[in-house]
Amino acid sequence: MKILMVSAEMAPFAKVGGLADVAAALSRALASRGHDVRVVLPLYGDLDRKAENIRPLKKLPPMSLRVGQQVHDIRFHVRGSTSSAVKIYLVECPTLFDKPGIYTYANGSGFEDSLQRSSLHAQAALLLPRLLDWPVDVIHSHDANAATAILYRQQWYAGRHLPGPAGTLLTIHNLAHQEVHGLDAVETLGMARSQASYPGLLEFHGQLNLLKAGILGADLVNTVSPNYARETTGSSEYGCGLQEILQSRGKEYSGILNGGDYGTWDPTRDKALAANYGPGKLAGKTKCRKALLRELKLSPEDNKPVCGFVGRLVGQKGMDLLLPILGRLADDGFAFALLGTGEQHLEEATKEVASRYPQRIAFVDKFDEALAHRIYAGSDLFLMPSLFEPCGLSQMYSLRYGTPPVVRWTGGLADTVSDAGAESGTGFVFNDSRPESFLAALRRAETMFTDKVRWKDLQAAGMACDFSWDVAAQSYEDLYSKVIKKQSR
Image 1 (tube, rainbow, N blue to C red):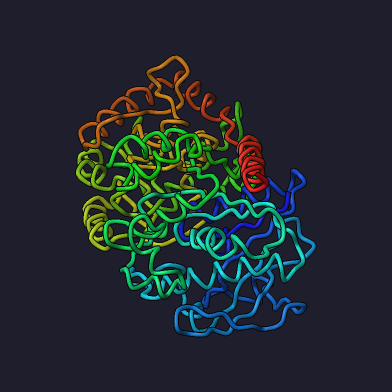
Image 2 (cartoon, rainbow, N blue to C red):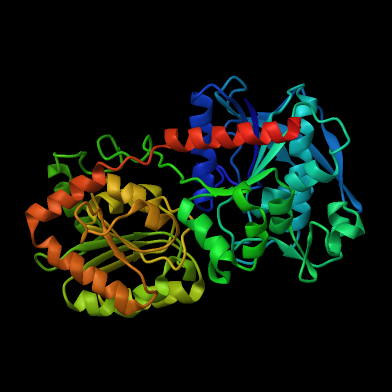
């Protein structure tokens, strides 16, 4: 199949979160199965074109696109070789994409022209099949920023030529990010005013909602784990106001568990580690633990675990569950290796508690990929007390690195981690979004940590888990076949 992916992110060069990893890994998995996969992204201003081997696509000339009342000059670029298994195209638009960042400024505030950026990105992506004489089978949009491509496919190209069936699939990576704008923004999108009033695709409680439009406009919709699909149709807490819209899609909305990138995350050959190791040969993990403690100047008490955290410091990730118990556990001899950036008040609160326990809590407030690998390998436990987690990849990697995760039972965490109290457990699971429940799970882990035989069995069970992309890619192939059939009716 010929698959056109529209995404705002793609690892490793344009990344904010898990979407980037999924776009890269799924594309590779599909290409390895024989599909022609092409990804379209904006050419962001802070990308190093020389280092990333990004160059103009000479066979396509510069051109102009209208967004609202403004005309913008664009040019298509390509990253790497056009003969690569996955072809990556980037849209250069100095007036919209030249500033650094993907969604926000350095201070965390969102771009005021996010709708214009989304519109131009989508228009450019839909031009490519015709410009390249490439009949596309499936347009696969990721999240709200790329949902505009589905809106345009459904509205603009319903009666116009777009080579190939061009069926549409929307994948929701995080329902909380919806791209909501005022009603006047309908003109920016170049859509009829009727779309801004009920029952128009864009209208939602007196505003425009791109994600809602994508959900209703796509041939099929999916999200990134079966449990998150159930949660988002079952309650307003997880549905973020769109639960009834998702319910209306019925069986046309499903969940496919993301896969893990085991090519990058593999302790048997990870070059970032002090020593490599694998199932049944955990001596290297002991060396990694000692090296991490030296690097971060940590000293846990004997028989007390080292707990790792790698992620964004935001409410979603459960920082409000972790911060109240950090000091108590540090007093008890636990050590913590915390890596990440996020909301200013959470960063400051984490720094404050770390300053009181310099030998027990190390907080590194930046993005450091190599250190992240060392934390996965050198920690005894990996912390994911998320309030919600559409899929999560960190728990998959911590399992592969022999570091049992401590997770809240939600979203993809519930699909991937079973509690060690069960016969075949792989980690420690708690239900309630309260610090006391998280603490109780950590106490259970602390008790098991002193039983070296049971602990090795727990590590072995986790390392045996296989959340590879091959299974997920097959599931996406099935969805692609269905959207093509819908277009051919």
